[in-house]
Image (tube, rainbow, N blue to C red):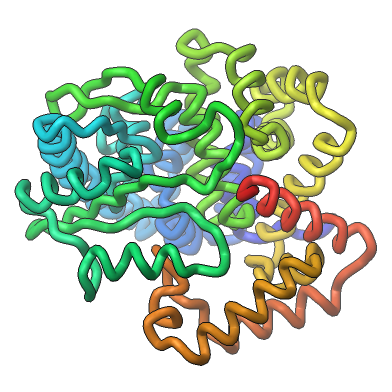
Length: 404
């Protein structure tokens, strides 16, 4: 039997059922990997989940690893509490300005289901507003002490977004003097029916955050947004694990949402493949868990193509646990069309001739290092098998489908 990678062991501790998690924890102890696992759990933003699972299983990591886990947990809880307080201030300011808004992802999960900032690592707050309200929202946030985290005027920034060759979700970061960062989103990059910002805001519900009331996205929308985000980030464990933990947490309080609504909404929004892939990952790690039953229900309502694509997407998560992140360029190559090839050429010319476009092309993240990207691309291309190629192609097609 092939020895599991440290990432595979940690994923099993975080996502597996009791037996699988205990076996992975024992192997981690035997191989002296806990210090490494703490660092990876921090990268995956999953320290609270790791602490909870170890406590639940009665596993003692001991020594330096235990001290590291305690200190990382305390630091993460303090950061999350600071962001939650800032988000509450921002939401109050938006409400006072008459702007409809709702939190989602980390802060939304804390307000909806985790209840305590110490239960979910967050470094920023994600807030939805409608496109027509963005300028009013920006003014209200500036009045509340948040400033745009860009080196140009907002109008110039918005103009750059309109010029992008590749469609994507639209957001702008705001930050205050305490370092609290807000991601204000007015487009999510999901084009399916019934999943516009307005639709999601219509379905938002009240929840408590920092002792005040805020609006959060509904449970079903929260699950689907996590699934969409997971696939949009190419199922990289670095971001996928916390999304999977969020989905698994919602599954644990199934009395607060409807399976039928989830299935119907996923189908209307074009997210059936994405959510099914997430559920299959969870079911793989915990075959006797609730995710398996929900996956069966969605499978029955899905086409053969959607089912095959979901299986291939789930396999990419496992692949990256074994050998690291896949190459964006390889995904694009596997799913290239004449239209995409043309857009790539235009984007490349734009990058070479417009310094502003080049500096802001990777909105919301850092441009990957050229040497690391090249190594990943060559590794992936030279290890393509027919099935591996189909897996990459399935991911590229799902990304393109969401953006239509």
